[in-house]
Each structure stands twice: as C-alpha cells, then as structure tokens.
Image 1 (cartoon, rainbow, N blue to C red):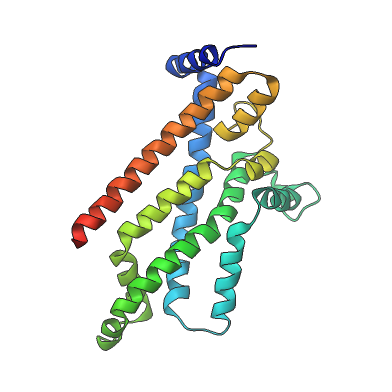
Image 2: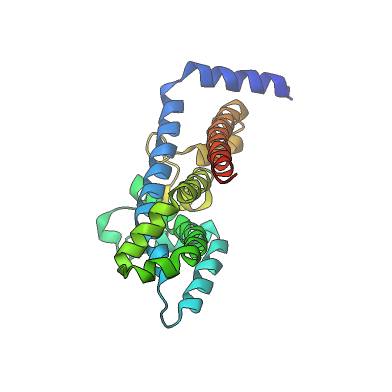
Length: 234
C-alpha cells in the first residue's frame, strides 16, 4: 500500500508542475463557479431586496419556500436540469447537456435560495433601522432598494463569497449535467471523484489541496471583511 507521505509529495509535485490538464480543471471550476455566483448575485440580491421591503400577499409563504429550498439536494437539482436539457426535454433542442452552460445553470439554481435568504435577512435588519427615515423623505421603492443595498454592501459581499465557496465545493448536480468530460466539463470536485475511483490518489489529492487553498483564501477575505466591520462599529 502506498504511503500517505508519498501520495502527498506526488500531489504537491503535480501542483508545482502546473500541467495543462491540471490547469484546465482549475480554470473550468473557476469559470463555472464565478459565472454562477455573478449571475445569481445580479438577479437574486435585488430580488431579495424587493421581497424584503415590500408587503404583499403570501410574502410569508414565499419566504418559507425560499428557506425550504436551502435544503434542496444537489443531485435532485442535477436530475431536474438533466431532464429539461435532455433530447426529450423542453430545452433539448439547444444541446446544452454536458456543457459548461448546463453546469452553470445547475449552480445558479443551488445558489439562488442561499443568496436570497442571506440577503433578505441582511436587508430586513437594515431596513428596520432606516424605514421611518426613508418614508419620511418620501423616497420611492426603487430609491429605498438602492439605499439599503448600498448601505449593506459589505455584508452582501460576504454573502457572495459564501456563495462562491459553496459553488466551488458542489459536485452532485454538475456531475450529472456536465458528465465530467476531460478538458471540457471536469472540475476540481468531479475530478476528485473520478481520480479516486481510478486509484489515482495523487491527482485527486492535488485537486483537493488546490480546492482547500482557494477555500482558505475565501475565508481569509471573510475574516478581513468581518474584522473591518467590527472596527468600524467599535
């Protein structure tokens, strides 16, 4: 049996060599996750603000549904999107299955309830503080939304980083709709699954270490931002 130290040294060597196949996997992961979090943020953050500052029929029901979707299994999302994009599905004619686009779609579905829920909670707290003032100056709903979004921008950025970390670590949905195709739809997480099943533990560990390093950078950024917030309010 191969010693763990040998596997670790081999994985570090793979990382240091920066081979084309290794870089392709890293870039594919970043492409999918960054695209998904960008699109999700553009759509979901303003939507969460609209839900937060408006009182409408079934608002509580909508909130409950969004919070319930936080527990949505990634493999179920992958299965549903697979069915929609398959040849017999509603969007089969676009040939999106087993593409980067399909993977981005799956991650957007998974990220949406996370961003909406976190953003709504932040906006709720901020809006409570300034609601009377915003109403007193006769600001429009659009002005109120832009004000609360700008005022809570640091916390919103934290939510985006959390979502990005979640996207990077996702494997179930993108494995189903992406197919884990080499040099096309293989990401760090799906690559780890494949290489482990093949017994290529050094390659799998190199991808795992890279994923952990990226997660470490994200957490360092989160720590710095939170520390800045604490200093600001002390």
